Length: 100
View (cartoon, rainbow, N blue to C red):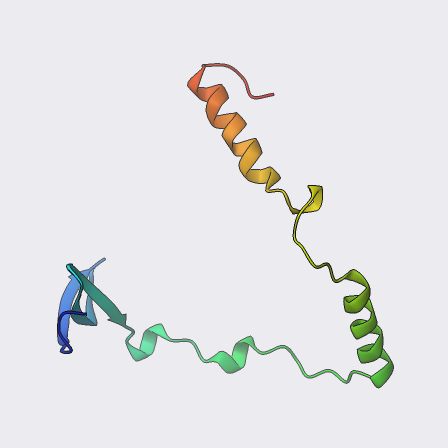
């Protein structure tokens, strides 16, 4: 970091006045957006309802986790098939043909 100071800034964006902190980080200008109170939702509305969990359910969940734990994330179960399929679609479009 080149300077330990920040500037409080206001700017207009998407038809609204924004507030933020402007600072220099290495050779880059960085703006940290500060939200206005009306842009922040109350997190209490996002909480799931309370649930009673028995000791047997907790022990069963822990046993399942122990049984399914692996040391290395390798093999066919840990391959990104979505990215592979997307690359095939992009290549097919590049060649003006239908994806297979």
